[in-house]
Image 1 (tube, helix red, strand yellow):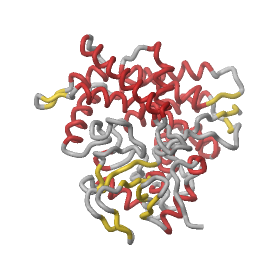
Image 2 (image 1 turned 180 degrees about the horizontal axis):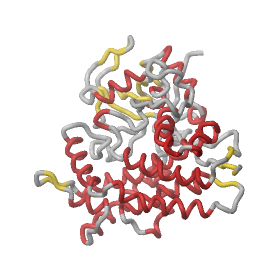
Image 3 (image 1 turned 90 degrees about the horizontal axis):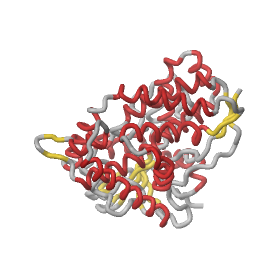
Image 4 (image 1 turned 60 degrees about the horizontal axis):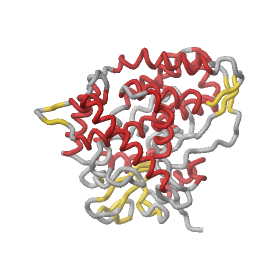
Length: 388
């Protein structure tokens, strides 16, 4: 039977790594009929694509299944020089909210949600801990009204999903995007009238050489950051917790010496990144691995495969918290490396320092997990853990 790679398959959501190895070893530049695009799976090819935006453009969108009106208007879906302008303005706004501003809110959120599971024998890390703390931090950074937290989270989770049957965004996903865009637009207009000391206000007022972000750019940036923030940070923490459940010796090492947590986080980003696959568009005919990709073809960059490439990492299928994988692609790379990576690292470290103090021993309750259906991301919908 001919090899196929279907990013919409529940089997790929559950375990993409055997298929990734076949791609790397036998089909490093592969045309996926199901996705309608090429798939690059080796580390060097993915990294080169990330750093060569002139050939591998983001201007037609970076999501495998893109939302209407988003391509070309956000940081992740634009190329230089427009990208550089957006990144400079957004980075300027974010640096006004120093990372140490989130330390106290993050610990307070941990105390609240860890306290809520203190008396039980089991809990769901994704829905009781990771997701709630992520929403708390985003609402703090943007100074959002707390009464809408659950609705924001529910729509953000829907936005990252893809219908495994229709193999595209269905009406519920598109409705969630429209809801979030309207929500962000209302916030922008309200904050323009009543600015404060928050990230959204800083996006509106950020200025470099007399230039500011346009209202639409602020709106789409906020929409994307809420979606990506809730999925990426919550997914990052969920996958880290999953790795520590599956590798108890690593978990016990972190309990004994919390200073190892940062290195363990980096290994989790390499070993089991939630950001699995993103899209580019070829600008000129390109020969690669014996294949010809035509100008206008879309290309899938499989970060999750590149991070398991034995050509780059020794024993890549081994979870080794002493590895120090400095060049992993868990936060992307090139001009589109994740702008919130440092914030995510700081937040995740705080959460796991507090979590491992509160729950030093735990085991998975479910051998088979339910995964978020997404052509881009991979994270468990729930992660039920038993204490002790």
